[in-house]
Amino acid sequence: MLAVSAFQYFRPLPVTAATSVVPAVEHVGTAPALPWPAQGEAALLVEGLGEVGSSGGRSPAPMASTAKMMTALIVLDDHPLALNEPGPTLTITRADVNTFYRE
Image (cartoon, rainbow, N blue to C red; front, side, top):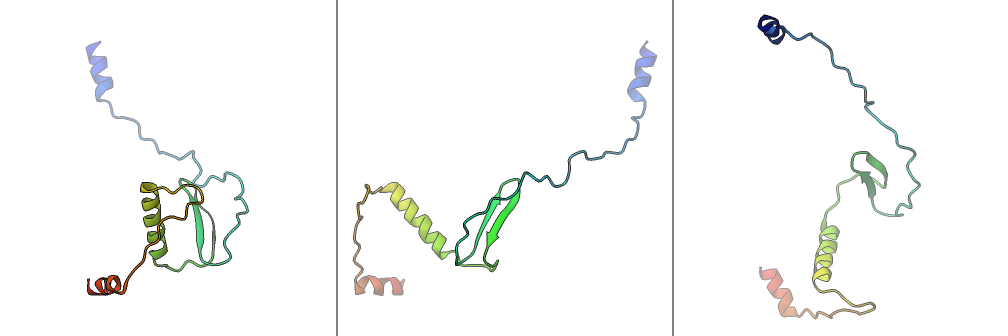
């Protein structure tokens, strides 16, 4: 019995070719008609599916507006405003502007 077990253990495995049974692309329905902006550029990507749609060109754009929006979101998250509350008014003086340009 020991000889048969050793033979099975050391015998080479059969060579087989692996084939994929999953399609490379899977369609999950049709993309919805989205209300795209009239100006600028926009895109919608779904993780695992890729791009659902886009509007406008595909030129690189500076991130300034996104940075401003994220800054505002962080400030408002830390200092929330009540409904219809206007928030603080900030007055910037000429000295503030000069300090900005110096630094």
